Length: 193
Figure 1 (cartoon, rainbow, N blue to C red):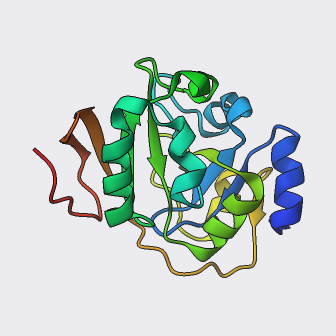
Figure 2 (figure 1 turned 120 degrees about the vertical axis):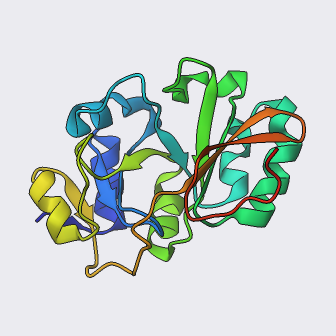
């Protein structure tokens, strides 16, 4: 297992490689936005499935949100973040290089994990997905994940803080005040239509 700290993680990410780190839900594989293709390769993920942009705090992600959705984004973020909620929102035009979706939307999340937030403060937002081979249930331990991704560096120290092992709830913004449930997860969102 290739264990690294935050400083080495930043070097790895800048070189174009992904890293694996714990979150409050499932462990994540993440990369700097300009290197998004690498996650699809490592996970054997369908390129039509978008990735999630994780940040350490609301203000780190606000520039990725289209003007039309900013107020709703701020309201949801202040109620449910950090936590197991992913918001799919229209992306701002100036951040279109981050997109991995075909519909100009972007999934955003701030994990409720000290280790993940510490990493994201150092690296800036990372494009992420769960740390498993697509189509297979992944491990929630660093040791188990190292078997699936032997060449990917893993953020230490281990053992990681406890995670839920459940996927995040995903909601999608349609228009002002109108959110739709995409995937039921850990968080119950009261504002859904």
